[in-house]
Image (cartoon, rainbow, N blue to C red):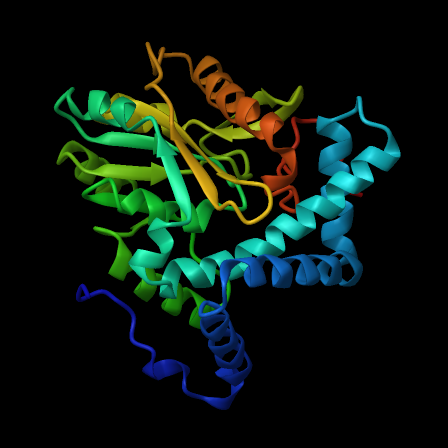
Length: 307
């Protein structure tokens, strides 16, 4: 591991024992057959739906805004499916961190590697543009089997022990791990020919954001994708990860690089990024992270949508 991989020694105090217990159980779960993990995720999802009313309200609000054409019954069914997908991702994280390579290689198929090869042929780094699908973590493990020098951009976790374990495991699996706040290192590594994996679709407030439409809602959208492409000259290659029905595993699709991107207009570029993401989410809406307050930051004069 690299020299900046965090030590776990500071987390031996009793106050960290509950998290250690949870992480230990997850590591044991990673040994279970894949269908069993799906069943566990389904059960946990039903429990989360009942026990976390705040997140239930957030998901309902997001889906009401984004799918006004659905009736209440259909939207509530989608809310429940969203909680199931989010809960399954907890066990997928464990499988990603501790699952063996031979086992994981049997769980997915990948499409569009020719698009990645075409992007690499430009002689520069590559920006993989993803979204906060509930399959985000395990899809990174799958991508690492095919992409040398893959470096995820990530946001720090709130729990320090979980953060330390997450960073240790990800550093074992990837070429490097880049904090979303460290733009200087991100730019340098892309210029050096690395492939960075970036999901900009969360609400980070007004700074470095514009209000671009997402499902028809004015949404605080980072301009960082266009800025990074402009500073490095790297192609932006959208990708999508999908959990297939039943226990069939996963589909990873690398799409053609965005042409003429960035275009020089922050709002137009952000709108294009959101449109690419929206197209993928509409194909599998239950697998998007709707329990996040995506529309928290509002244009001046607009009320809080989550009240």
